[in-house]
Length: 85
Image (cartoon, rainbow, N blue to C red):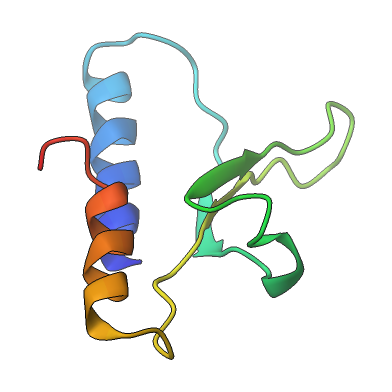
């Protein structure tokens, strides 16, 4: 989760530094995918706020590795989160 949080912050800084778009004041919250959604979102999903909601904070759901799974399966799950391996 911390790697995703760092990357979201790095991307926000890049967008600001290059004046690409106007970002909302509120941050994008990086949280674990709720258990009921993990079968549908095996990696990650962005949940945008409604256009007229006061709180314009988005949520970036990240599905964590299943700690109950065998070690080999955990490694496979982590590798699927990275396109560079």
